[in-house]
Image (spheres, rainbow, N blue to C red):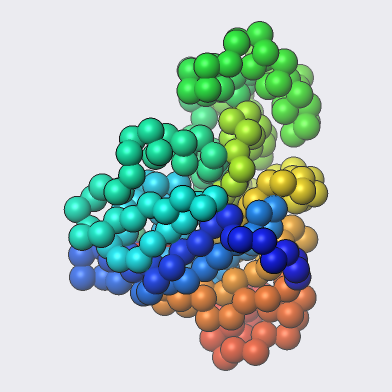
Length: 259
Ligand SMILES: Nc1ncnc2c1ncn2[C@@H]1O[C@H](COP(=O)(O)OP(=O)(O)OP(=O)(O)O)[C@@H](O)[C@H]1O
């Protein structure tokens, strides 16, 4: 397990999130150190994706406090607005990147343009500079030779690798992965895992990964958190949680997915 003791980069303090009468996160507490790689596992509906969506400011929450790199943003009262300026929300979105299950590439743009557009439009980077960086990132994910193709000409695994390059092009401090391989055929999971495994060596990049692939939990993370009903029921080093879980609910979950 990662032994970092710095002030957390991400901190959820007593965060409650409801959808109507459904409480998805119940006074949720969770912190992540800078550079830490954390995998969230747990049953469907336990609130894992909601944690990522709140961090990305895609979902408001009703109670509690969320701090990112020392700055808080609140959502008291559940009126659907974060209590932070638009400028601050933009800063957060620029520092937090997300890779979705369904890739979400722009279908009418080439692979290269998919990676180049956000740094140019959002960060104001010169197009030539953004292209040089995009090609480096495409090389890193093994797809530089596909730069002039369109997403529909690529396999799912290749599209997801482009989506990872696109997220990295914004130089995020935090990269969130929401079930990045669950839309892929099993034989394509390995190529995405190998890219994410490479990123796990990036010392400064903080990663949060929601997955049902225990290979990811084992090979990529410093810490595995088992979620149950909107709370972290058990957490620790991958070998402890996956190899010797202490909590009955964790054992039940692991035996249900590992068979
Ligand atoms: N926009 C929404 N409106 C209403 N309910 C929602 C909404 N989004 C999520 N939920 C509910 O919140 C609960 C938690 O969802 P969430 O997606 O965070 O779970 P999860 O642990 O990521 O599950 P999975 O592994 O299936 O993705 C679920 O019961 C879900 O139906």
